[in-house]
Figure 1 (tube, rainbow, N blue to C red):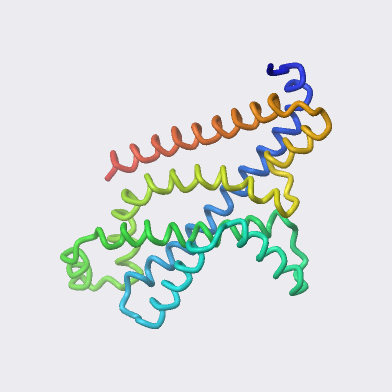
Figure 2 (cartoon, rainbow, N blue to C red):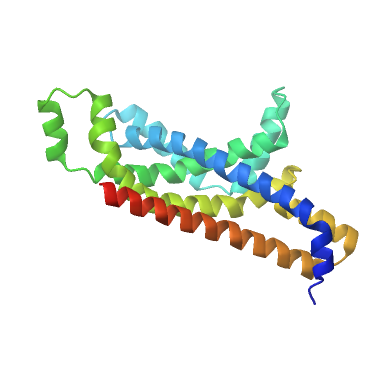
Length: 217
């Protein structure tokens, strides 16, 4: 049975975990979007050396478990003498992972722009930066947004992996409460419900944004 009195007592601590999980997801998504955009531009270009390193990055990151990446990043930064919290170490690591996946989505968005439009931009004297800003980016955005929604939802759930290096996100807070109350069903019910609410809100908000982008396109 679910003990709702227990939920009322401990919900402030669970909400603290929700705030940390959201911070990890949103900041790591921003990091991933920056990395993914840079990689997508490189992969769509003609510089073979840059493409080789970009493809290697994507292959290594996508081919190894995120948990190992989070742990490795935390230990490497610690041994290198960087004074950085476990929270930011996990956020950076998850952002690096996200960048590899988003690069493929962004690459698809870039390549969806017809060559005719790119040639027209050259004819009009657009610089590469202007071409990306005014021609490629607005059209690629329509392709990227649906996948960005899925990425944010995934990152919210993957933020639980940060607990392995001591980050007090939602799952970690739940484990601590369980160790004090011995009521795992109630706490796991609350954790699952909170994750469901978060991911549903992201889906609804991103769908609204997606509709607005297509309306003004």
